[in-house]
Image (tube, rainbow, N blue to C red; front, side):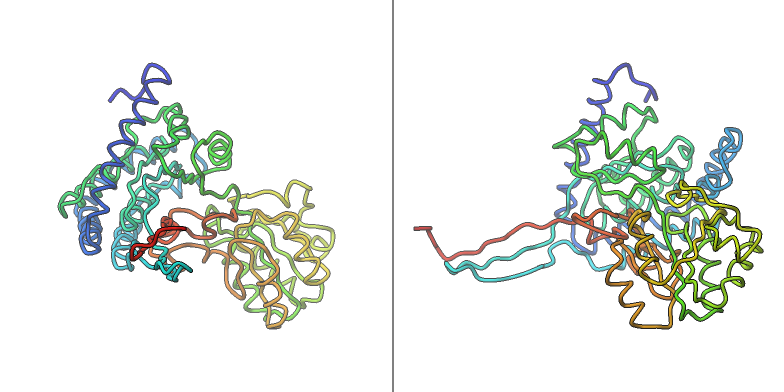
Length: 424
């Protein structure tokens, strides 16, 4: 297909055509058994491994183009595939295949006053649009989760990963067809024109939910323009608070890991809060600086280590996605939680503490999608949570929060069984 169509009506027609095909395929998926869907995923993983050379060659094209365009090291890292990452993608598909099918699960059962039996059962949402940037693994993660939960997917990846996405999609759908499932259950948008995204966002009644995965600009556009329900998070401004009772060795290890393991992921720590009574603050900041992290802090943080630069007001509200960290020394857990309440994006917050009462208070009172005790925020990931993979992290309050996997891709309907009751 020509990558640029003539006008908005053309893109509206394109999205309608793709959506109708996806919805038809989703109705076929509704008849598929649990084992058929699982086998489709196992075959998809097999095809990804069989086509590894072609996928890596396609990814090399994208990396070369990205370097020529001046993509940042963090963006290139998100884009890059190698044998280990590709094996991880295939293994994640197999993990999703092994998970229990949520479709048909009875959420609740009761008897109405008139004697009917009432059940709430999980059902697929329908056709889910995924709009994403950079990471080609999203092509497969989203496809696997949508298929396992009985949904069809319409994928629109970023131009920087166009060759990788096409190669991964081709392998995935080859696996579906090998298992007798409809390839059109997982479709890849055939154009990179931004107008196609606009058409997806306005396709109410055709697309049932949109999930954006990418930078702030993309997510803001989706949330502002969508006429379709959106499941998303805008920023990953994640905090770690080192309580006065924290074990110094644990605090240092977790702080360095939370920031430096992979700086470009949404679960990376962006602000470190250190209790004024924590005795080893200097050791923690020294370890971060030695690991190559630029530190920006308040006056009390600067007094601990001369390498800490002054933090601006904007720093506390910045998702760096780089080896840069905001640091504040705070007077106790109340000030730490006040800081989080003011500056957090609602993604992931962690407390490092030996004091169980303080930790429990933090877990109970901090209002973010994920709250951790004595663990790195880099674990904020559906795979690490045992969900097989994730379609994204949701930070809103409706439908789903945190890593969204199979259960988050379902809704429910009421099934009512009577014995001839008529309402008086």
